[in-house]
Length: 314
Image (cartoon, rainbow, N blue to C red):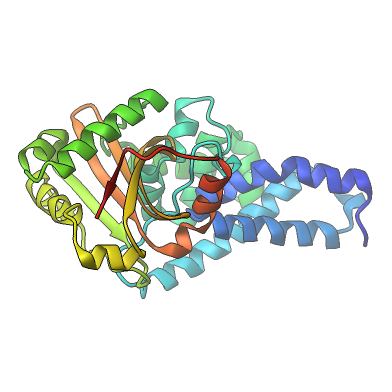
């Protein structure tokens, strides 16, 4: 059944919202795009004359596709080489969706996306739809084929799992750049003490290479351990230059709503280090170097135009 113009327009007007929901549910921009495309195919094949509320129908189809993906993703991640981290998304990318409230901004932070991996698929769906998109429990219950009371219980349980973690300090673009510059200066100082002062005592660093790029396969825990790890990571060396195909440049950026260091080699973004800012300092580092998870990021970075690096390394 071919789509009439207004039906195609209706779907396109919903695409941004659907992508933002799917990204929060899956932690992957690529998988989110695939889920939205699968939703489009089902919209195209459906008897649309029988669909009373297209937005609700599209959201239900998309959410259930994502729930299926989450179930299979858990199996795949059991064999994932090293640590798995969500795919970073550059500020301004429509994949990030609404950012009007603190809850919406928090729901797309890399720290929160990582924490949400601990939730069951239903807990994650309820939390995302309620906290990030403001759906009433009645509508979420219909989307997930649950009772409203069960939906409310799941939401409370999900919040308990997530709110026990250290709160994030929100920063604007100027504050993010300042944080990155200070962190980079400490990392390049060759001394651990400046980094220790910026990190919380219980800070955690996690890197994702996806077996495509060499990356530490276990988390680094504690300020001293992370400071030593970063001192070695930022130390120049021929092997590092060879790995990226030449010298690399470091940029400051806002990624998933927080400050980040970007490492570029030529036209490619080869690494993204996100800083999780807390009232006590940097509480976590999320380092993404898996090239599969940097493809969209690289294209968005290139589309943004020329960028002046903070410095060159390696």
